[in-house]
Amino acid sequence: MSHRSAPQALADAIAALLENPGDAERRRAFSEALEANPEFVADYVGQVRVHAMLQWALSKNSASERSSPSPVELLADEISPLLSDRSRRRRRRGLLWAVAASIAVVAGATFYMTSSPELGTVVAATNVTLTDQSRELAPGEVFRAGVIEATEGSCSLRFKSGVELLCDGAFRLRIVDGMLVELEEGKIRANVPPVARGFSVDTPDTFLVDQGTEFGVDAEATNGTQVVVFKGEVDVSTKHAAAGDATRRLVQGEGAQLLSGRAQLDRVSQVVTDPVPAKWSARADGDSLLSVSDNIRSADSLKYYNIVVDGLQEDALACVDRPHQWNGVDAAGIPKIVRGAEYVQVFNDDRYKQSYELHVTVKKPATLYLMIDDRVKQLPEWLTQNFEDTREDIGLDEGRSPLFARTTAEGSGRSIDHRFSIWKREFEKPGEIVLRNLTRRSVHGMYGIAAVETSK
Amino acid sequence: MAAEDLARYARFVELLTSCQQPLYAYISTLLAGDSSAQDVLQETNIELWRKADLYDPEKPFLPWAYRFAYFRVLTFRKTQGASKLVFSNELLDLVDEAYRAGSEEIDERLSALHACLQRLHPSQRDLVRYRYEEGRSAAEIAARFEVSEQSIGGRLYRLRRILSECIELRIRQSTL
Image 1 (cartoon, one colour):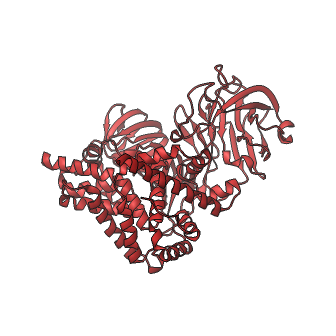
Image 2 (image 1 turned 60 degrees about the horizontal axis):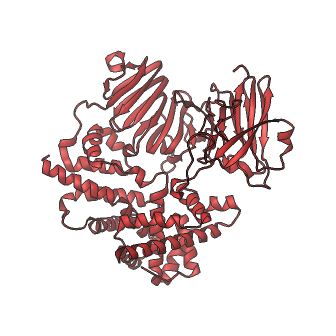
Image 3 (image 1 turned 180 degrees about the vertical axis):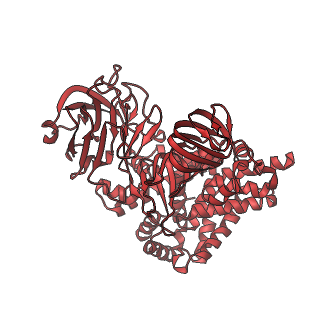
């Protein structure tokens, strides 16, 4: 299907409309331009068709991730019977939910839940009580709807829908059905596969609907709820907000907290994660060596710095906004001085911002390390006067989307795009330092930050 | 439920799942990119399920599904104030006709899209990545590269045009 190019005004109007279809002025401009040039409808159709295909094929919330490999078995035999009426009423968005709900409508009583269906299996459990039966939850047993709680425990649940749920510390969790849990208090981390998109968590302050993701929720009776998205997207509805302002979609790298009784989501500036036991905390008084805060993120931004405890290993994610990875520059691997260090996943987008200030607090005696891109030739005084070059290097594997036939490689010394020099500064006691912008005169990556406790 | 009915519904789920992208693109086109397209798609899915018994498996699924989507779009338009409608009824019919004229070969189109993306200039691929893979707006991209939003919008327009023509060419070549 070949067609002529639209006149410039119409082309501009189409481009503007696709960027912001909710803008009334842009809609009017486009409408007038197309009404005046109906022969270019095909041009418009071609634009939107490709726009929709790109959105569908490439977005992190893409259809390829959403679709089920065996929708019939999963929907009819697994998901639908596991949905309670209550869960059905609450969920609205999501293809899977629409299809699953429709299956129930069409198929009638055949697929409705039994009185207490098996919802999944307990993978691990320590000091967790199955409240209704006044006994401890045991690894390997199947679980059904009910309440589990702990004063200091942990558990890992695998739902039949594929959802993995980790509970940690003091918590009380009501499992309503295979797609809905109520977190009355405590902390959970959910890993939701594409087929279970729509899995929801209800807390006293918020209602979360997963859009294909891995996320954490921390609910406290007095301090409200914190939500952190590690991968994918989550819709967060605040229960105290006016209608229309109640829902916000959080994407990977965003975190928000809602204080009890408040209507407005606030930013969580940093999250501390411990990858091995899969623990995390967005509370400011966490047990990390470092804490950070910057001077540029407005209240509109919900992006957080990720501080990874003992995390600087091969292929460690370097930034929260890029797929870049830290690696050793050769087969010897990441230099020993920083291997296994606590490090900060920073924002690569901040590297050229002139007014940028990052306040780094070192909470214990430690060595603070900065990884500086070797492409920077004129080093700033704030670096050279406060830090010392260790003469050790680390590599950055930038990687890209598999779409572009280039991806990050696994392991040391492979696919290294840039070398970074490791600088250090000793902190004999807890202290704070302000890091700034490197330069705008050369192309470079954002610096990395790591720390090793002196006693280690 | 009888095994025969279950098999029938199984086939229906497969068809419905496989046509989500073209249905979304179709609805998005009729709504001029409005973010409500996803909601209308879900309503269409539910409507399709309710009418599953009416589907004749001997006939192509997608044209049948488009009709339901079209009526869901009309229903959606009724809920909107006149000032919010982008298209007049006449123009909507024109868009509908133009879209469905090239709406077959869905899998081939997606396959062609991926092949065409590989042929883009690296800077164009970067733009695709920023806009669609990372989900950044034209305004964000413009701020990052210190150019105007209109400039980015224009580049995206040309990019989509290149891809559209490349896809059409590949579809034509594959049917020769």
